[in-house]
Image (tube, rainbow, N blue to C red; front, side, top):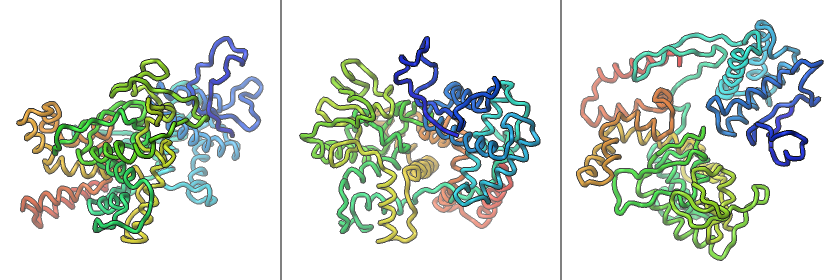
Length: 482
């Protein structure tokens, strides 16, 4: 089965009455023989493509999500085609096929095996397709069975449906990796070309200032990889007049966030100042005298004039930065002839491969300094932000700082928000979760127990009884189906 991505380029020559109403970049599944029906009867790929086209209407607005959903559905449809089972047929053959699919993905050929996380993600995608097909009257049965389970939220015990085909996994904090403060400091120093003691390392890598500045910004702000990779110099928050323990507001455009949902996070003063310094010094030196021309495969350059924090004229037309897509951002050329993306390479072109930088830095730390050091990716730093921020919120760090700022009359709105809002709600807003329930489940995978136990230590209240009660609470959680 072929997976292609729709492009409307040249549609005027397709002899159609109007432009096809298919989103640009929408994945399309096509059988090997390039046919969509047999004797006038539509094939299952027709229903699959219709479901994919409706994803933007059902809350999935990201092209990456479309691609992931299409790949998951293609794996299922290809497997059914090999064993001769109709994807929209009777329930019992589909149930038997689902069982065989599970065996194939967990114990089949090595190249076909999935881990538990990949299985759950893909099988839930297939379940979404069947739920839609059932609502649309396109199938007679679905292969999945659901059971009601309990979830503990701030509103109390809530009942939710769980797909029994998913795999129950352990929920210890190691399932979501993050860096403790000592490992984070080790990582940030390595990005800057420093040894663990802060002295210069023999490492002679380039762009140490860029890597250290951006590497520190992520665990300070919780930005996802595509967010900080495609951030424009104009969108970086301005530095306050003086340093403060209260973080700086950091709005993010919908086009660069996951699910295209605009949100506002924050960043600490020092990492933000380091990025500004990188832009003013290292970046300026690399781009001086160069004229940036975007890769022709991305499209023609988008030339900026009269830029400000909100937007600028792009090819003569006023445009807001928040409306620009990821690819369009890579095509932007500033009035000085440089990229608008913050991070640049030696030749003055945009830099986007942060995963490689972080991975190689992790390998260098393991080789030279600390054998236990994990492999760090962009999302590990986002988890690190979540953990560190929750710890400060629970311990009252931001609340105390906000109270001082409020007394001084600075940023009263943020100060009121920090002093009056529940820590979990604050973290929800910063991470961009649509529900506090999502945030609660998310932090369950972190070592939250440590935060509260340290609070007992600091308050002098930690006793044997407290240990027993805390352990009992966390042991009880293991019996809850999430």
